[in-house]
Image (cartoon, rainbow, N blue to C red; front, side, top):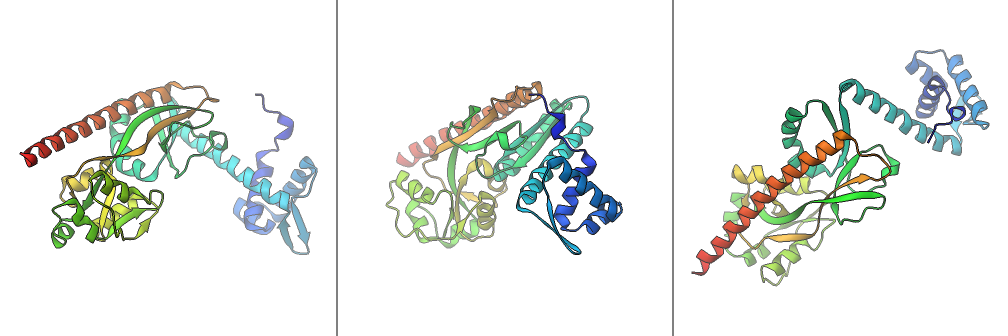
Length: 317
């Protein structure tokens, strides 16, 4: 859709307005922009004439945003930020493509970020920008090209593809393991259990999967897996987390994985992109690389399941 130029004020007017709205002062805005106070005042007057309505209420030496002006300021600030980000991304990689990806915080830091060096080495012409989010959103509200989310395959207005399941494992420090003498699944009932706010029944489901009646499930609540992992490393309790989030901690012996039947979450990880936006070559390349990394991860999980089955067979016989 063509942009109607008559609705676009000059950027100099918008910069003066955004700074004035943020400071609630023409004088402070002028100091920030290295302009005179009268120049900022003229910019605001010109913008108000362009819009056909007042943006500020003037009261002697003070100015105050009108209700409509406050809403307009938020929109303009976001638009200027998007323009700045797009310019920065272009300058960082003028010869190639750019992918702006939304990702869950812990998945991004613990799983995706450590793998990015491989992608950058294979595709030096593509710049990948990561932005964290905790909940699903509408792509129309931002400039993301795609997102990795945890939940169901339903995301209105998007093409969604399956990435991988989430298998939860209980972990704790070696010191906590010995202090509570963990040997059987039911032994964990006597220990402090770390809970995720968004999945309050996770431990209960895990105990049921182990054929253990879940009673007296006590312990603190956290709103992110990263907090739970940090608390577990500090010895605060047992954590029930996706194994790929604690691969390093398990391999270095900081955390011990309690051997039990793996429990797969009802939801899974999905890759989503807005249908309203055309699929760029850069995004297609990143998606293909992501699926390859997921295939490697799924292969590791399959090997661990086979090892667990062999463990059960040895234990039985």
